Length: 128
Ligand SMILES: *[C@@H]1O[C@H](CO)[C@@H](O)[C@H](O)[C@H]1NC(C)=O
Image (tube, rainbow, N blue to C red; front, side):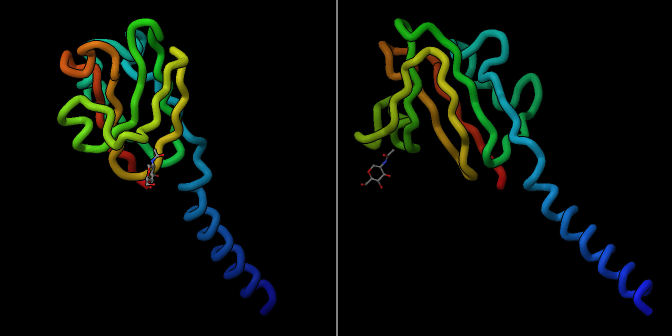
């Protein structure tokens, strides 16, 4: 009897651990633009040369020359118009920024010169 329930408990515990395991998988660290870093041509990086399965809690690392570029987290309007929008958008400028992503869509642009117009911008889609 006890053995029977013991097995059931074991199965239930295993099931709970498996479900939880999805969350327990270590967050991934992504170097934006791979070896090139945060620079021109990066816009296709989320999907090329391969689709990047971003998950909530993953970290994006933006590497660039801070004299030339920066990283601003903008909304869709800011992304489309290459402007710092909303006005209180977070600006990163260390040259080696580590940003943890939340679920949903997040837009990043460079706000220096006409970087963004030249394609120094990406949108990432992050799954829970
Ligand atoms: C900007 O301000 C709005 C309104 O106060 C707030 O909800 C939002 O979180 C702020 N955004 C950032 C990136 O601080």
